[in-house]
Length: 268
Length: 348
Picture 1 (cartoon, each protein chain N blue to C red):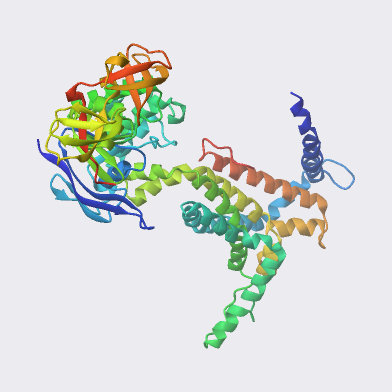
Picture 2: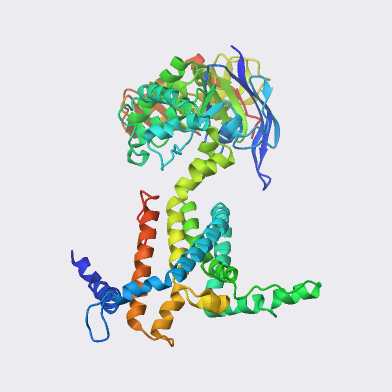
């Protein structure tokens, strides 16, 4: 029974760093500078609907691309020899050991108008292509940065699938494709949902990737919020209101996701 | 009866050059219950996996109903398997697990309902349809695994040590039940086990394997009473195996003494394995016996006592309903037809 007192520090930690900031966001979103209640800022968020739509759209695409790339990778990983798995996992994780900013900067020099790709294109006599400052570049940045967050949960679920289940499935008449549909995908569903969560949530609220790879034309919600707190548009009330709306949107999307996964509660 | 499966010169070699199966030749008759019996690593599961299509032989041919099925993937073979640890699908309930094979074959819903119902009745799991397989006991999971395989009406059912994880009582019940199912449905069962008693209880024919070779094929009585070599004798029930020689027909010499026996046809003074079952050793007063020994230990085994007796150059195991005190000297004698003479086994 005494054990539960050991969790007290975490409770305090949670209150100070999670509950209090949340309440502060709610407070800021619904008050003016003088402390009067208002819904002005919440209704102002509507002006930025196009940015919300773009953010959701780009992060959905990035999440889908991550899933498509990560699923086979995770499956192959999970079926390798145990000792090879360790090495391969490290290679997957390796980019994450480098600074996030640095990784994104690297893409700027690769995609830039005078960057490596365009340089190579020019060398073989082709015209330069506009790569940087496009929404494609933003999606690429998201996929590159968040791919490991999709691979890892998928891998950890798939690794636990007993090999004999594939044999049982083949024994009962399934070819590889129907084994995938009837056995592998249902059994890896918890990994799919948590992978989607872990990619979608940071992708929808990122501001560095869009700023560095998207130029001024691909503002995302993250950029918008940052501008309200640190930028010229300084307006913490509006910033709080946008954050609140974003949270609600994520909450709704995750609740919908949960419907597809009856057993497992997805982290939110 | 016709053969349903023929294995011809099957060799399995792993990448590291290790030979798991060394030239297996075997005919399995239709509607028979055949058991592969042997110690772990003898190749019995490998042979089963060859038949199931989960493993490709390095050389040799597999015939199913006379047709060569080399390289045919498992899902195209008319056999089903009950796996060692059941391999039930954890995301499906009992009903869906059993229905799995039928759904893959796009059997109409009405027929699935009927056939799964029949299976549930056969394995005594009515009312468990909606239960998650994770919330079943070992014995129940076992029954689901059997139902899931049999619902597809396979010609042959392969069972890979299916009762290994169950406790003794349940195992005995399931042995009888499996045998009953096999006889009722008139199917061919190929059963893998390392438990000799299980093999003797259930089988029409037993294939004793060791070291990637088939040692002996025969009915349970044949295998028990007429083992072809010391390995089979030792593996099927406990045996006293003694080095001896055959000075002439019907006379065997071991432990420095001559005994009458019923075997003949050995070359003079050929060295042989002499096999005597523990229950065939008769205890007589030491002063009347040719062969004597000192009782080292006595263990009560329920039906009989198991005594370890130290004699000239051998340690004897004796099963008797009467116990002799530890430390006492006893005499041993044997009926001539209880002394089994075997050629020294040539296979490694």
